[in-house]
Length: 245
Image (tube, rainbow, N blue to C red):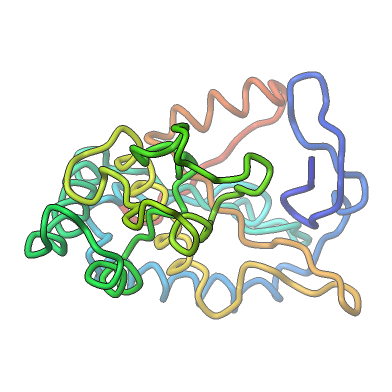
């Protein structure tokens, strides 16, 4: 596995926690993190002005920076998710996705729907289960090489499919995988907005960077506390609430 902070290959300990001796000791003066915190706050305000606001229940800070230590490895944020707001947004995104294809004939043609897919908020070819959701997948007419497919983007079916209309059922009905894929898309949007301004990584040596903005996504503070108790029962966790709905 690779370290989530510096990208180097690391081993995991017996409870599955990444252990990376290389970047564990890298710390920065607290003052150098203040501009990053200010930019994060601006980014969070932008989230609250966007369509993603309903999915955020609260924002908290924890870790060394939150308790005011002069040397910090990163700034730890907890984003608490509003499940009801997330469910509504997922439903809206799926409805918007389906509505793009309402005027297309039952027999989809690449020339008619491909421009829509290219401009869509979500490309179904990034689905971790594509092309399993194609009705031709696994049949004798499917010529997809088993060792050639690799998400997140596969174009083999669109470019060389003999059937001519290799589109999955999620274009006009709710397939099994669509909800999960749309959730992933929403969370990626949220993380991108929160780290705008290239604040999530910091260079500590020429050509070498480490992650200094760590965003944890949970449904409650209790979930975070329970996770810390499993990994480090002796460590005291102080959580500072920054914003709450």
